[in-house]
Image 1 (tube, rainbow, N blue to C red):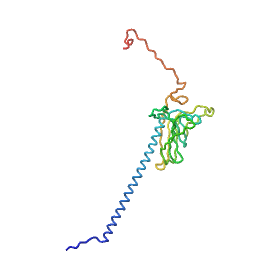
Image 2 (spheres, rainbow, N blue to C red; image 1 turned 180 degrees about the horizontal axis):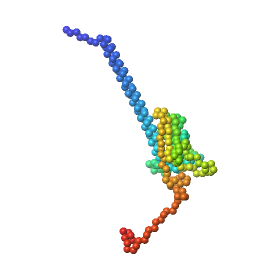
Image 3 (tube, rainbow, N blue to C red; image 1 turned 90 degrees about the horizontal axis):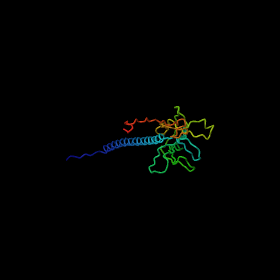
Image 4 (cartoon, rainbow, N blue to C red; image 1 turned 90 degrees about the vertical axis):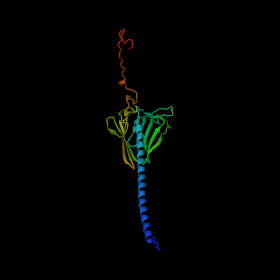
Length: 244
């Protein structure tokens, strides 16, 4: 009769050791793959959030209109008011009204950075505010370290504050606010994950802007009488006389 021979204890220990080593290597590789996937998904989500925030800003700034407002103290404010680090506020057109409410299609919008590193979008329900008018805030981005704005003036020079300084304000404090608009606005964001981000927003210049900066109000110099063209009289019996 043939003798049946099994595995020895040493062979079993060696097989178990090899299996444990291969399992550890496979687990470490799988863990690295999962961590890389989580990092890629986080980077994609962060990039998507930044793209959505930039898209929201561009949609607002491209609709900027030269319409000044009155703040809660009754003081006149320009159509676009901004500085380098304190944020920007402006009046935009095209406020959608799907419910058909009795309100204007103009909206006052602003962007600022709070103390917790959150980029906030502010908007008011009314243009000329009352003392109890409070803005509604929407968080667009988080983990923002710094935010700076620059404004392209009419002479193609970048300045850190808008509107530009006017000499007539010192002579006449009751002068109308400067409702002119910059040619472009540049935003610089410093984020913790993606570093520095720069974006340029072009401002559509209004047509027929008057002295007070209101659309559709031509100045007195441009108010010319419309030209009238005399129509020659048609000869009797001609095709023109009968409308042919």
